[in-house]
Length: 304
Ligand SMILES: [Zn+2]
Image (cartoon, rainbow, N blue to C red; front, side, top):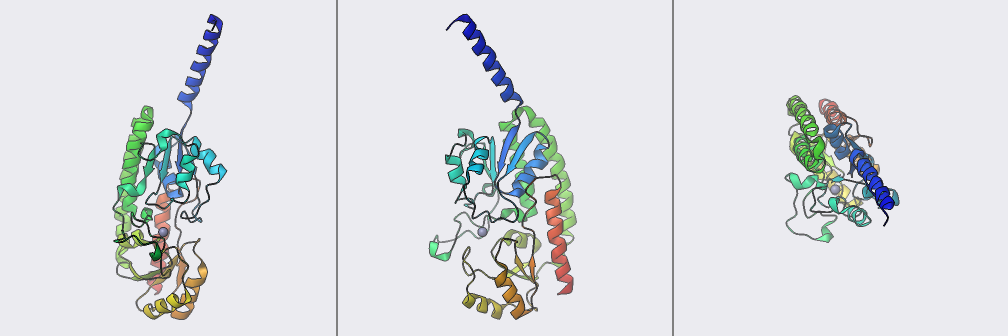
């Protein structure tokens, strides 16, 4: 190689280096709640792509080329884990995500790994439905888990994007302080819900119930992930009444027919609760989600 060519290569390499150094940190969040938490901690320092919206069931997502393109540029993959995304995330990771975001690496962050999961099965038997060996993955609706994840996320970001570590630390501290205040405010609203019965379509709400003291009286799906059968719904109808059950809960993506049928038979109101935040993450989205869930439940609690 001539001296000139060497000089050109050196210039090109330094140009590439500076592009790399100024490029924003890319976060691929599987669900909108993790996108919103990432937004709280990273502010304007990261580019966040959220793979699914609040009206989508994250159990069933197709590993589309557009998602592959997004995960390829990810510096951090932030998802629920506990097998929630087992049908699509491993495929996306195999199709060209960097070595730094593969399982076991700091760039691979699964929220459920850092909290105590509920409903861990004693036996793993596929005939029991869509059972997650790691326990129920829908951990984000216990707001105490959000603050745990804020800390874990801050620690990961400090490793992966160390030049902004002090910024993330500051953001995480103020988010946590504010969230602790909210937790205190919310906990004052819980006595009105504590001990009240709830029927659920799918066990999307177990962590919300555990936090709030609401009690699951019945599940419309006989087995998780399997559509409710007429026979099972009749059994559920024998168990629930307006006396022992305040509401039948479902998400926007659950089939509405079973809860509507049960409402007609039992008189227990069927309600749709928001399951997550909007797909485009904004600061304050997570707090608004819990406020809106609590308000909806309180409105039902005073009426029934
Ligand atoms: Zn589930």
